[in-house]
Length: 412
Image (cartoon, helix red, strand yellow):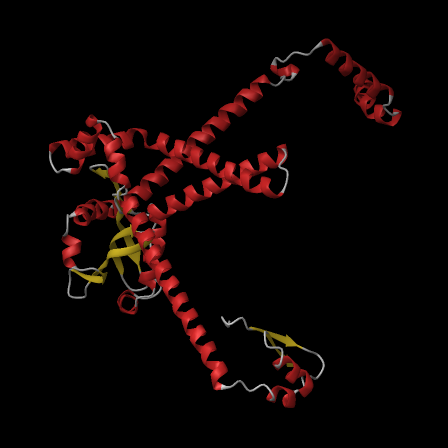
């Protein structure tokens, strides 16, 4: 930009410019036009500004740059001041809220922030309230989150389309699904599943070369487990809530191709990640006794608190009673089978007693049964063949002929 009133315009032409056009543009005085074309090297070479003409342009350009730099510095300074002011206002926001509270509330906040008996009592009261009404608070928060998400979806959709009744119900279902998914995600992030810990421990045990060499591959666990779950509760330190990490201490037997062992572990979930604090296996040694192999942690962590040691003795006793428990279950199964057979026999006897008995055993017949029986007998007599009646008369004839034969023999 030239302050002397010169204006420079760059025009791209599709046709070649000539030397006459360039000279005419230079002679214009108030307006300089540089015509550029694909074959205008000679015409463009005519424009050669002198040093006297270039000096005012350089001075004006320098002044313009300095002025722009000063404006940029002022804008940066003002932006920094604005950012500082915003930060100070945000930092002073709690103070403003504190000043807006009544005097009893200010005294309560001061007592909660100072260590002492009041702080402990207030923390206990808040913890007790959460333990008693935590589920209701979670349900109320989930309902509020569902309503807020539903209203946000309606507002976003109404910008583009006209939302009807069915679409409103669908968005409510989407909001409820989103809140449920978020609850399940948080629950999985901050809770410990004993079966998940067991599966991860078995993976670590089956991929440890030293343990596989001692016990023999593959390693098989058991569903018989003893575990203690601690932590994971919400407690308050003053007015600030804190979520304690959950810990799981577990013992379960381990069986290999060559030896058996007992696994002791301690796992915790921190920031959604599950990690083992202690993972040890007690294996019987050749010299007698047991040898403890540590995959994670050490003896200090094993002896800390004595929880695993307390779980170990009753768990071993329960495992030693496994055979006795199996025999007891078999005896109970046999007794139940005998009871089922006796009940089935009694039901059969009662059903047989209810059935109609034959006439020779004192049984009776209904009138229609007697009529049907008489009809069957008469039909059998009518259909009987004469040849089948002869053998029935033969004994009578033989009995009549016997005295006659005896008399004839006496005469002789």
